[in-house]
Length: 282
Image (cartoon, rainbow, N blue to C red; front, side, top):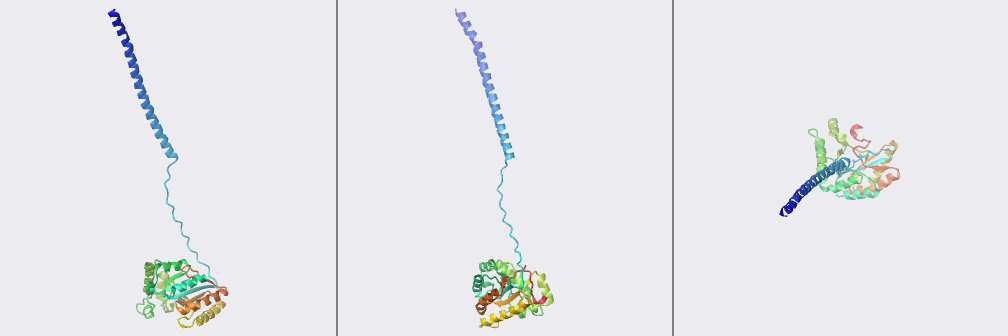
């Protein structure tokens, strides 16, 4: 009996052993194939990501470039064009001139003396330009005995200094100049050198004589309109010489209204204006 029982116990051992071996093999296979599937899935996912990346690349945000400023085209100049010009500023009357011009919707051109630039702030100068008016230079000293002397005239050096000071102090660049007392005082060589330095020189064909009629604004109005009528017959644009003076300020509304009534339009003179007027070339 003991042998039979012992035999029965021994008979089950191979079966149990075989079962355990199969179970171990199955587990190993599951682990093997599971890892393989995981790796395959990972590779597939990575591959998919690569494909998506290729098809839909991430677009980098590009900074918008500022629009290019269109170059200002010069306005046409006709026989009914008038250029108001004011010399010798900036003066204590400057703000009253600019306010009046804005009220009348009329631009003008101011020729500043370098030694007077401490009377004006950069914001004021830029506001003048923004209103449609323009700024040029009228030397540093306005002293004819220095500007036009025979030996070492200071004309060109003073214009260059005024231009540099305007750039430094006011933040504006202008190559427009007016010679004190007119360009007739320039020698031919100095006139050519001025052009070679890039300056645009403007004289006038109407002298308001506001410097002469210091307390009589009515005579200033009369003088300007008389000369304007004479030039109208010659069909020439008007370039009116005035100064930042109290009598000029008082005369200005009547001058503007009369010229408007006669069909004139107003412009600020600029470097690219297609009309030249200087005494050296007449």
